[in-house]
Length: 139
Image (cartoon, rainbow, N blue to C red; front, side, top):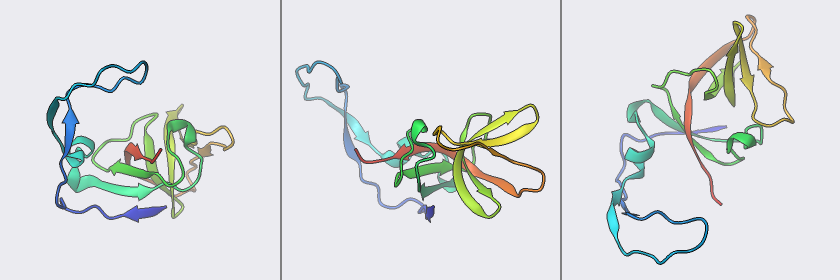
């Protein structure tokens, strides 16, 4: 994984946000109303000083909607809870997995049936770096 540096707040590009939703089913006539300008930083980043970006590598989280090459938005201010998708450092290696806490056991679970869960034993060095809040990928 490559960690992308977050800037304090670079110049903001505001894009139009339409008042009407776009139907994903049968098309309807378009309305020409623009509600406001949308700043993606304020929409996607709740804690700017505690947020970083990282690019996903691999396919272990595809069932969570995280694909190879996606940019993940990670918030270090959020407390990781059971079933959170987290960035963890496991024995010096970064990984993105779903955190599970069951029966006093800590597991890092891939969201892809082709991979096995990682049981975190006392002899392992594991640190949770943050909670993944958003995955950005191209269609």
